[in-house]
Length: 138
Image (cartoon, rainbow, N blue to C red):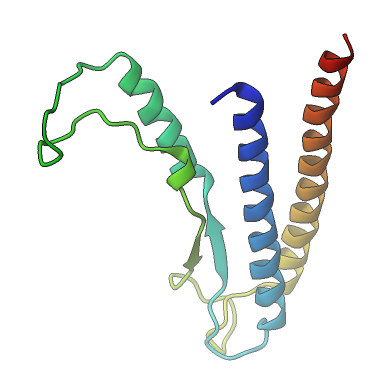
């Protein structure tokens, strides 16, 4: 996979994650007064980092030849395209007497930050395609 395709794929995946985070944040705000509701967050980047690290580690790793699909595979890289965002519920904190742990102001700030991040990602996608257009004109 070339660097352009990989960059666009990663940007698109991050845009999908940003959209999911936006929806989760909006849901947290909507549920901020519901008794015993626990806020949710989306995790993605830590798993993506593990996938990239496994990819890098497998480049210099000892290679075993396998002749059967039942053989044990070692040092196989974790493909970043298999990484999926996960919703995680925070059961460890309680911010309000009713058992709810959503701070609406903090969530609103998070939603605003996610929106700005999404706008930046769209600009980065545009930049990638601009680079291709410049290269094709030369």
